[in-house]
Length: 544
Image 1 (cartoon, rainbow, N blue to C red):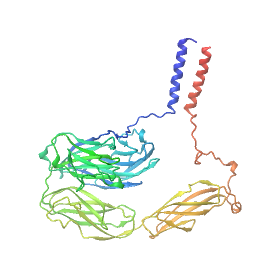
Image 2: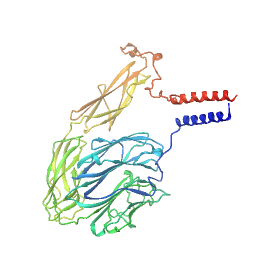
Image 3: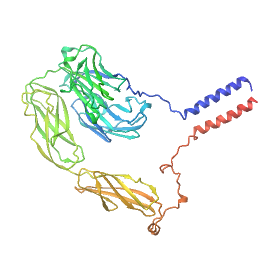
Image 4: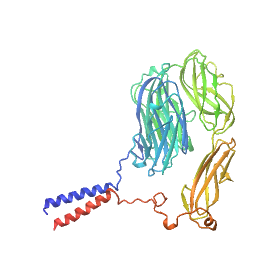
């Protein structure tokens, strides 16, 4: 063999060896950064425009397991830009999982959350697996009540910090609003103390009468932290030194008046960690408004209540009227049930002697009588001619329960094989009624809160275990599992159930947990190894 041929064969061997390694090594092309994504010290501006209408910003509500539902109520108008945000706790930056989101009854693209290896666009992962995820929902954002439902799965912790919606809408009767939307996920900790949100461009200071800054944080604790606008300290009421103060909820959504702190150029908000262990500012929205506040007078002139069903989303429509001298801009109404706010609706503008219908969504979790009313300007943001006519007379409504119980069987798995003549079956039960009975194979079992369990005897062979439940409104539901018992008892041998002998069972079936192993020497890898061995043999023969 000539030297040139030998060199060629060696090169081919090296290339094939490199190709083989690609089957076993995953590329590390990650946008993840422990200190912050996409930047460690700033939020990035994703939208800056002016609109005749308004900017709707709402969300919440604190760390909870999935499925996680957040209800929104977008004002009337034509939506021109909308973005949905979801915060997820991964647990660590090593764990992976999935997230599925349904928004306004439309399922968004499913995402795989890959921790430190995540390369998904619009997925900002930092710290030890803290995610802030953005979705473009302009095409499926409509006015009125709508909701987002988030479900996570996999190895990640999977709890949701909160869900936010920012929607820009056009309204011919609205005011002129200039707005900036900044997003990201800086991780503020001992060696990364500050992050900024910059609002570029020149501002006509004489043009605007109102300026609002919305700030959203994840993972705040009880320690002190600070927020500045153009170096001026911002305060949440009397609280100026612990802005991210939701503590165990780990989600903060705050609004600040910044009109007196605006400058013509280089406006910015600064997030200061203070003494927080780890703090993630993830959203900063600045809106500037042109309309002067006048002598308005808002009242609720009518509330239309349909038949209300427990466990279902119900729409209550209220008519809001302005009987004052001047128009009212950017205010909010709330639906109260038994002294608690269950839904809100934002109104961008309402001129004098005009009315506007707004819809509220309420999903009662149990049946029975409830007291309901609507309160306009419930957070007392407007100065009105009359401040005592903002709500209707309370209404007594009766909630009807047509929702069947929701049974979950956690153990055993359907199709499970056991070598015993008894098994413990357990699971959970959810219902809109507290009066509920759970039966296992017809026998009533004890419940503890939302959990239940029972010891069930088995016969040799196949066993059908039926779990049923009935609530106080006579709604019922049934679930079942099949279990195979390998235990030969006198009872089992005398029964009509039969089962193949143990020798004939296929215990290597991939469907049996624990038997599904992956052999790396399959498919393309085997072919490459064969080629490598052939070339090596050829090389040795040619070299001799």
